[in-house]
Image (tube, rainbow, N blue to C red; front, top):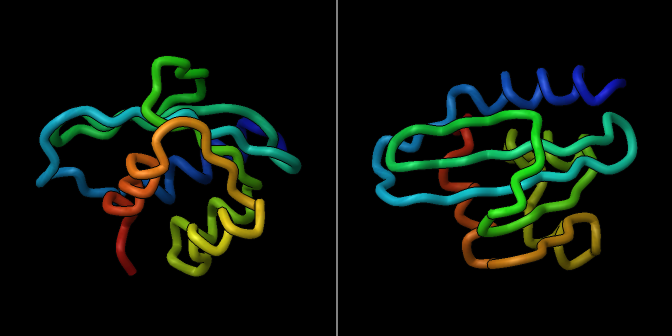
Length: 108
């Protein structure tokens, strides 16, 4: 799988995300390692979510994870805390803000 394919799939999975009750700004750089390797960002400003295939160095948190594990997190099939504790999810920056991204995942 190429990064372009991985990014397209992830963007579709995240499309139903809901930030309608959020006010403020959060920015994440997500680094996919292994299959589909590449970098993209998720930015949430007030009630708008933007996902683009670029580096975002001015971020609140940088997450490094495999494509498969990220898909599992978004679908609610994998626990981010367990992934973090086992080293499958690495976080640079604010762990508290990194955890907040789960509030916007599509439910169900």
